Image (cartoon, rainbow, N blue to C red; front, side, top):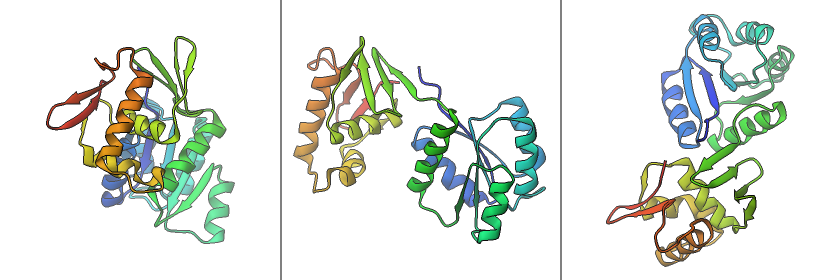
Length: 226
C-alpha cells in the first residue's frame, strides 16, 4: 500500500491553509499544518515530514529563524511560500538553507511541480504505489505487473493517475472529463471517455470484463479500489 508523501505546511493564513491543504490532498499528499515556529518544531519531532512548505510571516517567530532551526536538526527539504518575492527575500531564504522559494500568488499545479522536483532532487518522499498486483512508479510514470511494464498512452496514464489520486472515491464522468481535458489537447466527449476507460481496463485488469481495480458504480461513476 502507498505511503503518501508527508507535507508540513507552516502558515498562519487560515484561508491559504484550508485551500492549499485540500488541493494537495487531492494530489495525493498527506498534509498537516501549524501556524508558528514552536508548534512546527514539536510537530516535526513527533512526526517528521518529507517536505515543509514555510511562510516567512508566522503567528509566532518567522520563517527565516524557523528554517535555520529546522535545518540545524533535521534533513528535511523546505520550500518558502510567501508574498515576499523581492530578490533580497529570495536570496535570504535560500541562504538560510531553503531548497526552493515560490512567491504568492502562485499557481497550485506549479507549486506541486516544484514540490516534486525538490523531493526528487533530495531523494525524499514516496514514489512506489501498490494497487492490487500493480506496482506504479509515479516518478518515472511506469506501471508494472509481475515484472512486466504495462504501456499506456499519455491520456490513458493521466486517466489512471486521476483514479490513483482519488482512490476509494467515486468519480463521476463529468469529473473525469474535467481532469483529462488539458492532456487531450482537444475536446473530449462522453463517448471518448467510454473508449478510454475500456482501453485502460484492457491494459490494467486481469479480467477486463470483471474489473477489480477500476469498478463501475452504477448510476454514479467509477471508483478505484483503495
